[in-house]
Image 1 (cartoon, rainbow, N blue to C red):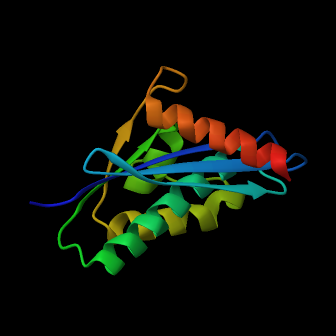
Image 2 (cartoon, helix red, strand yellow):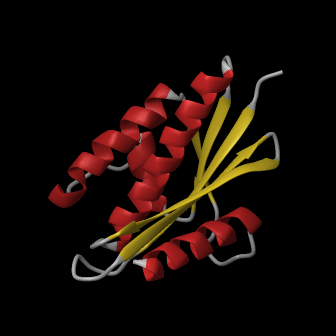
Length: 142
């Protein structure tokens, strides 16, 4: 049986002149494995969203390698259609400041042969709500 690894991610930010934060929940076979979050000294919402997804995919990659998991099913779950579109290559990145993040998210997404799933934000999805809270707390923590 293959491992199913869901990487939930969310970011919080306004502009380059304000603080940002990101949150991630890693779920393996339906069980929450890990929560991650981080502070960004200046971040638009898109920078925070992409950073969250990248950090989540990086963690999933390290977990897969450490556990010796073969052929996992990795799903990136986000309420940001931009994040999912960049990861999957469905959207082209035209914003110069997002270019490096776009390259990095695609690198991990492709390495993990991941798929995407969109969830509506603030709709009661437990793990998405947790990511939102983690991102907000990280943003406020400085």
